[in-house]
Amino acid sequence: MNREHLDNDQGMWFIHEVESSHPFWMKNTLIPLDIIWINKDLEIVYIAHNAQPCGETCPSINPGVAALYTLEINGGLASSFDFAKGDTVIIK
Image 1: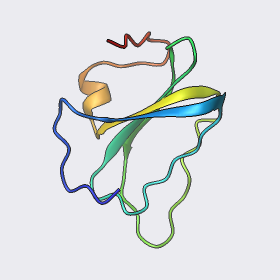
Image 2: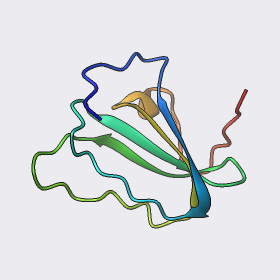
Image 3: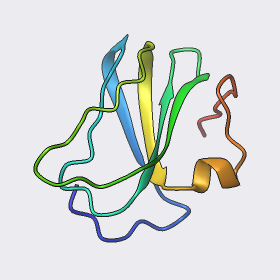
């Protein structure tokens, strides 16, 4: 939240306590983001492409699938990197 810039080699990694459907929203977010939900098997289960900042009313972005992790990166990067549902994520 409140970030004016995010380098293309950076992101925000969220580790959830339980694998479940974890909605996100873009309130107080100043830049478009790709939001990527990843399950316990490190498989991409949903991608919200180019989620836009919002004002006072912010709808939740709900993947509707169970995830243990969520990654936020600059909007458009998921497509640039050709990320797709079903891809496996490698954590180093």
